[in-house]
Image (cartoon, rainbow, N blue to C red):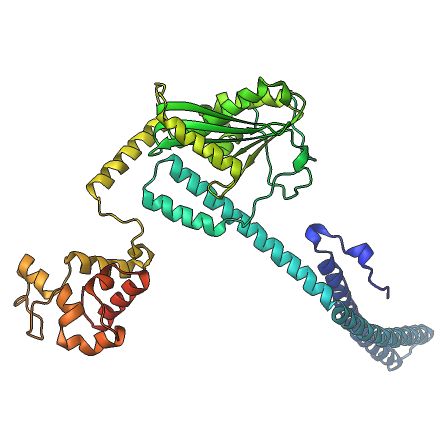
Length: 478
């Protein structure tokens, strides 16, 4: 039996070397058991064959030996007896081998158990690494999904409620610190057949921070996400100086277009500057949707930007497009964002919107019209945090459109009258939540201290949940 060696077994696919080593030993035990079972079965067969031969030899002895057949029967009997003896000797030999194999199996099991106990720390470490890697990949996928969703909603000018929900999910998945990218191992091809799709990196090392020739942080902004668009560019040059650029992007311009135009302007400025020739260049942007469009072959609206990026890549020694999170106090990005907002007051250029821009403009106009018609709409209403059933209950209590006696009788003439079974007043929301004497015990259970009507119907999510629970406990059909 050979001793296991981590040096020969540890580095397996996906760092599963420990498990490969462990299971190799376990499979050794299984193979030993299978061999023992095979030998035992063979012994049974051979022993049975030997007994049959012995029986056959006796049959030859009992046969009448007449004439010249006498010597033949004697020879046949002798051969069969010898063959039976050989078969039995084989059985005894294999039985001894089985005993040795059993001792080997017991020793193998003992060694395997010792190895498992002695390497328990290694097992714990390997499992911890794998669990961490799995959790990391899941968190990264969730983070990217939340970022994509937020960018899509902003690009499509979704309602403020949807954007706020997406931002909340995005912030929960957001890492606590941002680290500048390491460009030491990046290579950009010198020529491409199609507009270039630069490397998108998320490196975690800051050691080459001082080696970056210049960093640009473009940003775009549009009023109500569709009007008076502007792009801002903040550039840090190799000599530690900086530049600020603002450009209008159109009277009707989405945030998506403003971000793309800001990136294109940054690329053009850098191409025309000798400081970037044969230098390392990094473009930082918080518009992940634009970066995704650059990698796609189905986004013709960014072809001009892709061409500008390609031209820049031919002059720079290294070029990287790096996504960064927005609105998290990254200095250069905040400066570019402010520049983009200020340019909205400039004179805007007129242009014919693309199909996607037209859809965004229409959706934004409809959303704006809806908000004007519903000025009291509160996207932060705690009712959105409740379950669907609880939301329905609270909504019906708020509006009065419910199945309480007062509404059913006064609106549809259903029932024998609007009065509550207690006889004190009409059975409506106010009466049920505050006054009905039949519900005093239940009311005291859920609200030991008096609560205003406004708190019960428009308070926090916890308060609204208590109100819904009170209704369920009261056996009232709302």
